[in-house]
Image 1 (spheres, rainbow, N blue to C red):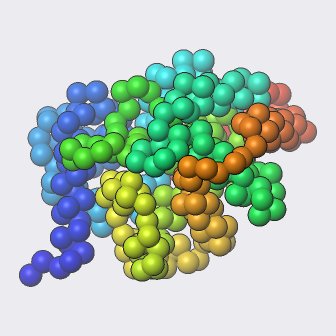
Image 2: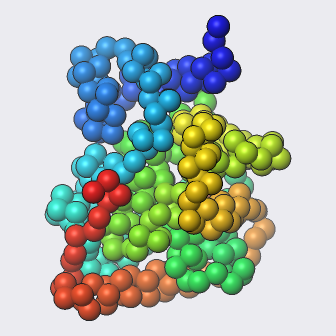
Image 3: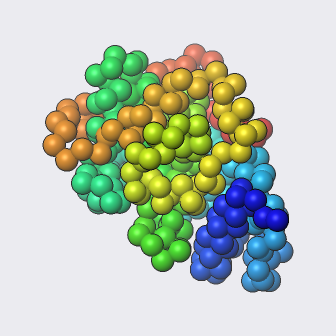
Length: 301
Ligand SMILES: [Fe+2]
């Protein structure tokens, strides 16, 4: 007798399997480093449904840092960061800021999926909500950059559209964004918040019926590619997180920041905050006796 949870797992596996097969030529190495369990199937281009099924039940461990796989992925878009990405070192603040600006200058004016805003407007609205509620500047910076993974990825990045439905963005964008920001020298506080906005959504849809009902259509769709509802163990684990309340608050700005007539400060105000954050980080590294670059520590090390 198959349970509802197993049915949901099969649905997600079906989507992930289609993703794996449709992008197998360009992303097999990317996928196999993210999902070592799939290496054999990817190299032989065979089905992996049974392995995928197992991945659903171990999704909390499968979604750990993917820096080893995303470094080559990111360096194909940002060759100037290749050295830093391969050695897991941060870059100087001025280069980091130029990368952030280039992301917004190239894809920031694109529509934010099915919403009546652009990527840039969504970022500005989320940052403004954080700022207006009196949160510290690092929180505002994280809100501004939380979806950078959608606009910093290479042109051939796998997207969440392989089921034939509308495109709802770059696969694992929260991890791609987190790891780019880590290399650029942002603090762990910022990168953790950026990474959290997908798990927070999974937590909220799993625990609050009203949140689930009111979730935007694009977020409902992307949920299918992001692991779906949390298991009881994942919910219990999220409940123990020291930054749980902050992460939930952060997610609420993400939901609210999609309004067509929302007046925000200009983007330069937030670039200045980003620059101040990067300078503070750089000064801290220099205080610690490290000149310009320092190894950062992904969560899995
Ligand atoms: Fe967002």
